[in-house]
Amino acid sequence: MTKTTPKADINFEQELWKAANELRGAVAENQYKDYVLPLIFLKHISERYELRKERLVELLNDEESDYYTLDKEEQNYVLEDPDEYLSKNTYIIPKKATWQFLQDNAEQDNIKVLVDDAFDLLDKTLATFRPDLKGILPRIFVKSQLTAKQVAGLINLLANPKLSVKENPESDILGRVYEYYIGKFAIAEGSGAGQFFTPGSIVRLMVEMIEPFEGKIFDAACGSGGMFVQSLKFLEAHGGDKKNISIYGQERYDGTLRLCKMNLALRDLSFDVRLGDSLLQDKFPDLKADFIIVNPPFNVSQWHPEDLPENDPRLFGPKEDFTTDGNANYMWMQTFWSHLSDSGTASIVMANGAMTSNNRGEKNVREFMINNSMIDCIVRLPDKLFLTTGIPACIFILSKNRDGRDGIHRERTKEILFIDTSKMGTMESRKLRVFTDEDIKRVSDAYHSWRNLPNEVKKATNYENVDGFCYSATTEEVQKQDYKLTPGIYVGSEAVEDDGIPFEDKMETLKAQLGKQFEKGNELQERILENFEKF
Image 1 (tube, one colour):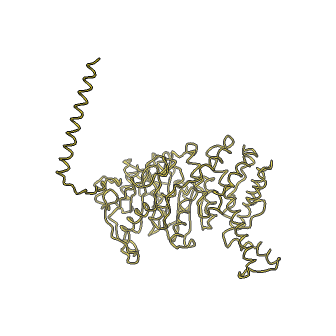
Image 2: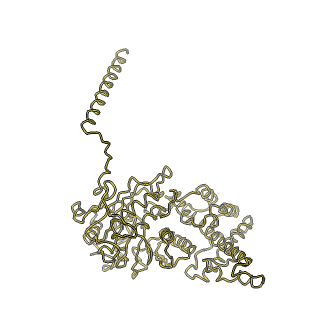
Image 3: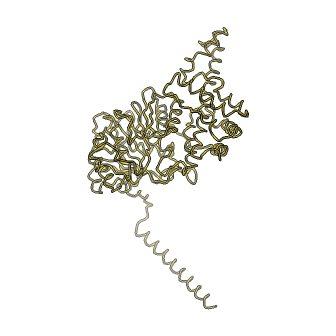
């Protein structure tokens, strides 16, 4: 894993705050991202077109290049050939849909019309080659309450190099901007239900643990696509090929789904993401995924389980025994399990309450999962990892490859690994904690050494329990704890390093110190009483 200096997912707050101020009063706070992100998307697509065109011009004038030619007509043919751009995951952008055109005309009185027209042009251009992207950029500026001056100010602010794909080619800018706005305006966004962007360090931990090298990746609450983006980064960091993965996602909010499509389109990923409520409108009933990486909304109540069919194939048993309208957490679990392939693995961010809930509809599912060897690992997360919720969280890893028959992983059907990271992470600010590379490596290494067969090539080490950090519990041990899955129950306290001083000597020292403190206390008491007598 490449080492980087730990940093939070946001490092351009000042620019984004200024952008928010341009929108203030004319746009609802929970809609800021709907105006900013499409502009950033247009900017990125436009910049990529410009970069490719500049590169082609260089090649056409390089005598050592296969493209070299002095024929102007042939040069123009190459520069206008769509395939020369498609091969590099970009497109020929009409002039009036380019970021430079909008910047040059930002002060025009009709800039709102020009922006919407640019969205139309770009939308049509993309749909020509990618029909699934049709409608990704709706006309929203003309009908908004924004003034021409506000739109001009927004364009000028977004021209900042920090938000440029030229300056930051590897940065997940769309996802990070999305996180900033829902974090800054969490109340308006409704984050109390657990609907929030998952910070990058958590996603990286999940991805490093389950290692999605190839196959189908599914996220039933995909938001802006952060899980998919991090999976791609994992693949690239480990020498994989993105052609070996295919992406499936579902999202209940149309605006957020558009953001997800923007995020994935920028990375030339094969994807099928659909609109709908995954709990009640499963758009992929036949999908069997090799990897599920998901952060579903926590603790959703009144989600209408009565609308589920009695014979819903996702349920582990009778609907009245395996659902509750008070909480959808374990309906999510059943949904994810139903979508795993025969050797699939799921990594799920979940509220801590799911580890111990005694509600009948939830505990029945948890007991069923434990008794039927579905749970591979539980990771307790530290506080302050999320900007937008204070709900304590954990990670559930479910797996269908626990029988040891795949030649990669050992048989562990009667075991569950518990990992406690509550003391890990680095405070990037007073409110935000992030996992460092070292944190992520420590946790993923522990999981892999526990799960994987010995491998001479990788020189894998044998797993060992570590007090206060990790413990491999048997199913019987978990059953004796009334099926509670809180890691602290099993990992115990971290061992304190022995300082070499015998216990008896420590006691004598402590007694002497305590005696001196008592003496000092008595002296202070006598002085106080003497002072009272003077009055």
